[in-house]
Image (cartoon, rainbow, N blue to C red):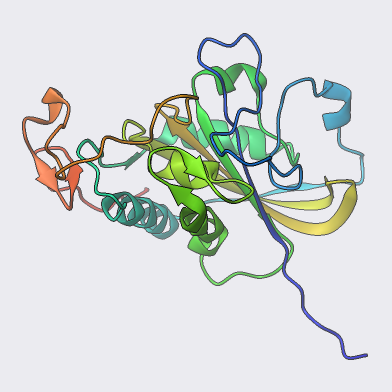
Length: 247
């Protein structure tokens, strides 16, 4: 039998109930969530997150080009939502969120966390065992969930929460990190080599009962802090956003 190259790409996004004391899975979709794709940090004992001595956590810095690619991808998705958004804010990179994402990614754990931070921060995860040409390949599956999402809050697929976090109107900051992991536990299996992407978001989205954005003419309901400035269907700073350069 001829050898075949199989790439596994999984994603997870956390949903929290407002003012909840503990993390919980609370999807907006009306169908039953799939345990294969929905992950919860609730009730997960810390000893299950411990890594064996054989596991490694190799850091792979996100370059300025990759940062710009991630931002461009997110903002393109946000600018093209259907129906159009009246209050979609332009997303910017946040180094603090990137550092927190790297701290969690360094654990090489296929789960959300840390639990305390999930109360005020959104998080999307993606993992692959195969090669990828661009870092945006790791977030494309989040965007593909749009095919199952119906505005304002219906999901006909297993999960839509990665997509809705990407297009949550008031979520205007993102920071991501990538780690190379060895002998990583993923749904009961051990992946010898894995690439883990963690993206943290602020303000946090996916609040149960809320909609991702207000429907209407682009930029017609922007927060007053933007002074009426609109760029590519998004509420944006008065100056045209520039590409980020990391020194």
